[in-house]
Length: 310
Ligand code: HEC
Ligand code: HEC
Image 1 (cartoon, helix red, strand yellow):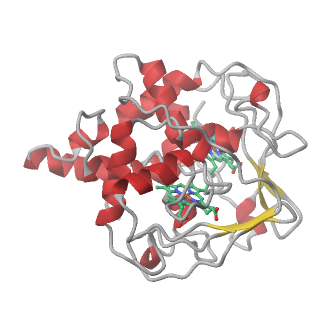
Image 2 (tube, rainbow, N blue to C red; image 1 turned 180 degrees about the horizontal axis):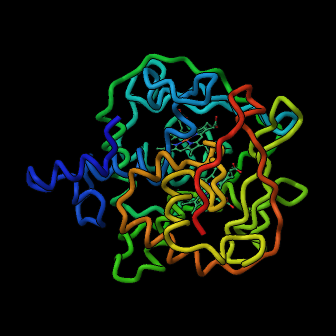
């Protein structure tokens, strides 16, 4: 698959159309929407179903069906967000798509439930949200009926999106923080309270159960706070960039692909650098998380660690 970064090199030669998509823009565009959906917003991480080996079923790009079984709390299925009129969002206006993503309400008056990260997308800029809607309108329609969800917990309530412009890259920490919100890092990397709500007093400290494995082990999110001993405080920029956009921990462990590194790899180097600048400002929280050989647990050959990168 050609990544956007590689495509950008081609575009630079052809006149730079795609290069512009990676920077904050004045006008919403399909290109910026694709840059975010296939990149930092990682919509397909949930909305494109996976094959048994954890790779994506590309014939069903964004067509939904991926199951989140959190019973007794809820059983949800990522919905079909292709423009199919019968089973997707083909009859929605662009503004209706924006409102569903940022405010969690659909034109039918339903609330969009978890784990759709509406709380994070709530802070998306007007241009970025509209760019995503424009892109979703432009992709091929896929007929794919998705089962109804069951929620035994409140779905959540979201206020009006504050909107506004995309922050300027001139302030890398603020810009990186905005991108990290769109990339919903804290949605996965923040531990939960007993009632299942995120414990933001320990934001980024990891330990949120991501995937139970057949051998009784489980993958938990990692501690990405600036703690030197148990977080990523001691890592070089290079090691952080390899983890975020390459899916490899500093000790060489291959990260379980629920960590959307394959999506983040489509972000520009500048955007990844801004996220790293922001990540370094996340207050240190001590929380030791064990990595597991999820490959062996899934019946694949045991993990061959990549080289260490301090
Ligand atoms: C962490 C998983 C996850 C991510 C990431 C995610 N979604 Fe969702 N999304 C869901 C789930 C699950 C639902 C269904 C919730 C329900 O049934 O109430 C949903 C519902 C929706 C809906 C409502 C569709 C309908 O028919 O009601 C839209 C629109 C949507 N997502 C768009 C997006 C876009 C665009 C992105 C990326 C910017 C995205 N989602 C990222 C999990 C996710
Ligand atoms: C959908 C969930 C999810 C999202 C979103 C996510 N991560 Fe992760 N991330 C994980 C999981 C799970 C792991 C651990 C995987 C493993 O142990 O194999 C991980 C691992 C990491 C690691 C490696 C840490 C270590 O000690 O090896 C870094 C760094 C990281 N994530 C940074 C980020 C950043 C920065 C963002 C946002 C730009 C982000 N992650 C978004 C789930 C997520």
